[in-house]
Amino acid sequence: MSKTASLLFAVTSVIWMSATAISISYNVWLAILFGVLTVATIGAGFVWKARSRR
Image (cartoon, rainbow, N blue to C red; front, side, top):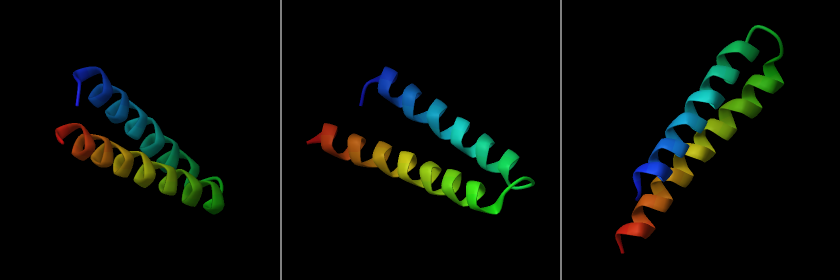
């Protein structure tokens, strides 16, 4: 995986995590949505890394 892709996944995950933390006090459904997006982004990063190694 290139450094640019790693940085993109890391920054995007941090943004989703921050949005999850902020939305916890406002709306539970939004927090759940952002939590799922966080997990999906981290998972996509792992998938990308595994496929790029092959």
